[in-house]
Image (tube, rainbow, N blue to C red; front, side, top):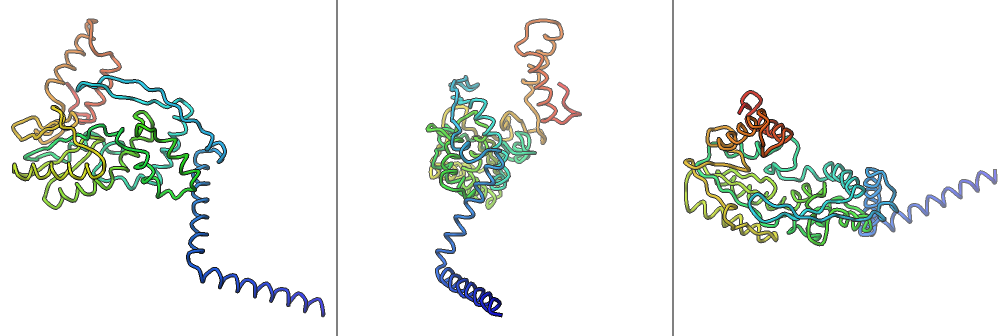
Length: 323
């Protein structure tokens, strides 16, 4: 009987201690928030590590190594590429899957680059039938995306400080986003999310159309109004500057195209009411195929021509892809 009483007293004591602890904790919401915040960060960090198939020590030891070189641009100048080594590239590919799952929904619907079921064709289709097409280009797009900007777009992952710091290190360089890293396209879209939203609303409220493919911005108007055109360009320029970017004012990077001109967006022409490629390009491809069939010297290889055939099928559709 005495033993039973002692057990009852013990459990009553435990209950009393639990009640006192509950009152002490709930009377301080900041402490509750701190505990839940820390636990959430730890849980999220473990989820990330599990997705990558590494433990925390392996993740923190991962080395950042790029090979840098320049390639010529078609429009002149050169593009600085930073290609990750095989180990880093493999890790970045896994990170891309994780980041797409967690943050991909945050990318603007008006973006057509680096997104599933979107392409240069869907980007151009937005503007079919427009009276005026405005083509703008963001100068030094990837280099302008700083480590600070990337850290901000990764904050919603809610990771512990060491894991967040290492993640930022793995996907950025001091010179901005590395052109060549698998994670860079998604991060660039996330960084421009607020700018995309602001420009889209400006256009939507005036009956204009807006789309973006990487660093190429396109706005189209239903009527040819010079004042409205220049106001739209000024608005885009202002919002980009506020976000730390600039419009490229060089010749060939800034176009206002009316219906009597070739309204070509990222190489896709829309004047006919559907997406096509230029006649000149089709003639060049026909000539290349003819030269290759006759065994003559050709500027394009057979593999390159097969790539162009696939491109034509995408732009024109399977039935109309014949040159």
